[in-house]
Image (cartoon, one colour):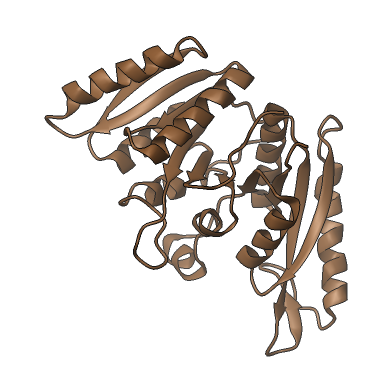
Length: 282
């Protein structure tokens, strides 16, 4: 059985971008899509609401409305991609996505980027970062800047690699996706002053190992990793990064790299949390 790809659907451009990205991933992996909506119950007021949608005194009416929006988005999914819908009732968007991802045993959750400003984003929280903490599988986040259009091509795949085990899992997945999609694979490593020679040698060795599977090139980036990866993302169609849980409460990321990359990358970012379900082509 091929595990599905769950696409988090809201209203507006975020939904359009997420569905387009989900379709591209589904074709690449040979997986069905599940379009997921969350009806958020607000217990103290006895009403139900989702972000951007009007409160409803009857939760059943809200569920019906959310289902209608999901069906509208599903109608736009190309016929070659199997697609169903799921509505979850939960106290928030992330708990609802967690319910659907667990129910469907999703191999991937796709999320549209937040187009809010920095302050609003900080107040509301970043859905992509939160999902990677909670949903138990890899998470694919659309870029925050420009809309991607109805057709998404993942022809240039980059993997952030630093030699660690989380980066190794991301590299293996990136190579698999590039092989499946006949894409160009770029292995990216950032190096500070004095580290370049060692980093270049390690990069060349990794690319030599991968060359038998997929066209691969090494890209040595100068300077701090976060800024270097964000800059490099402008020349990619997909950036794959690994992540692990830290000891600090509520913290997911290794250092401060993955958070700014997810928020500012110019291409979709695929986050592979340590121990999470990893996408696998059918």
